Image (cartoon, rainbow, N blue to C red; front, side, top):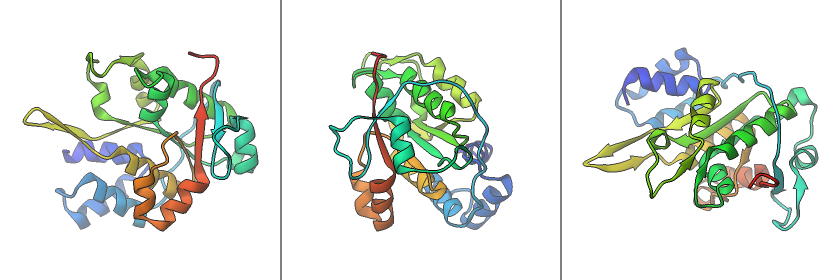
Length: 227
């Protein structure tokens, strides 16, 4: 990834230009994006929260200690598990691919599902919301990778809510970054919550602190009345 694009990518996460330049000076321009992100999380100042606002329609399916069969409203789940006044609500990191595929019944990448999730948290007063989606989802849909309401991704990117994780093609084969790692790292660094139905078991086994964090801060969900 070229330096200007790297700068834009990390600034979208909320890191200052000064912090990004400092890390690039230390690791070099050829450093992997994952390594730069890890160093920013380890040594950089915390990203600033962007402002936001809007509307809802999600139901939580539980977090650590709550059986998947127990249905609670998302608002109730947050009030019980992540108490605090509106001004101190936790940052929210959304697994865009997981949310979109869940909304599309695991058959279609439904971008409307991402919009519903973002709007729900905005309506609750959350001011730090980040959505991670692989950059290849910008490409025109194909028969084997159907996508619906793709314009939603563009809208959220303009609002600095959605962040594309890097991907590229080598000899016609698509290589993608492991977006789960971005999701967990940013949520952990921000002391926030992760919105996903993925348990991230492989990442839990990598790091005991991540294991505890995922168990405590993973907010699972179900969509209702919007199928």
